[in-house]
Length: 126
Image: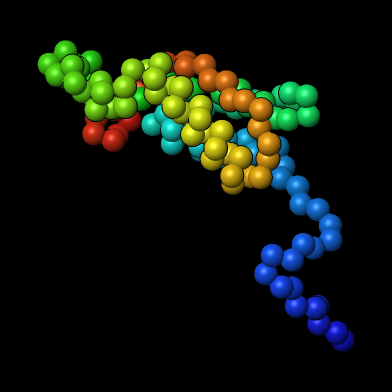
């Protein structure tokens, strides 16, 4: 009985690795949920081929502070990360980076459609 040869750090191995569509989708949903301040179960993710790269399309709500608190303190908008538009633009970049880094997949773009708002009180989404 022989034992496998030791592998040096950084040495390439023969074969291939594949990440299933389901695993990529779960990763994308988790990254989007984190970036948008919502639950992963509230995010819908779809993949398409974009000239050999992956294009990610997301539909999700976004967390917002209670509107009563924004009326009383308009600075609360900036404290929550800015307007919904600004936060969505930032989320696209964060999601692209997170999914690319963790999966080693090459994404061409991330498209986000905000489907609603979830009221967030101090880090909790209602």
